[in-house]
Image 1 (tube, rainbow, N blue to C red):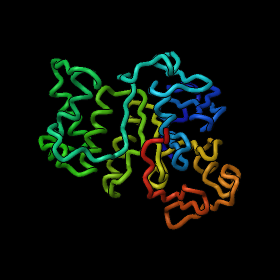
Image 2: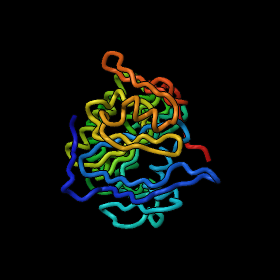
Image 3: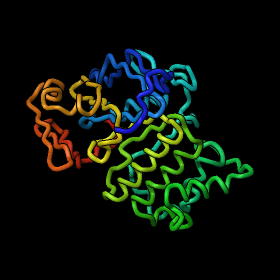
Length: 281
């Protein structure tokens, strides 16, 4: 397993006694999690379990009902941050952009370079070179000047990765970045995320329905289900007895070739081919 288990370094993300409710339903509570530089933590669980909500809380878009989230590079609570921190790279779910989107591929990448993603772009000297370098890094040279709406889902997701990595963020949040991508593009996007993690010693928190493409790269798994969670290495978490206790129902983890398949978990097969979308409001 690759990645950073640097317990001696200060965490990039430090979550303490965190809880989150939606209406009268508690999604999870008592969450304590430190993510260190160079570490990749995958977040698994069925739809509606609060995985996307966790990322939104780290971004400062969703208030916790209890607890704190502290970023090593900001040292402040999640509730006080704006949603545009340039120290956080964010790769969203791979939802196709409208076919009539007028942006070119390079324009999408440049949103992460030439000014604030949520404000007016402010061109700076060297921006074009930086955009070109990012385009090359994500393997998008051949389609960077085409309208993004005409590109495939995998091509669009490579460009989103380029945008997210524009500021060499010490923290990368990925929300189902592999959804709807074929195997080749899944591996390409994972490769980009993993390379950034290793070369920049960045912390990565990645929500996914399918752990299989990440096996061998992920350091720890946070598995949320049934209002509870378990945290540990893949070998510690992806076990029949552990997931049975988590779900409160008989769950079996089977190995099929080099893939893991979870059988019996409500709405949570390890193949996880259904799409999560946004967490329910």
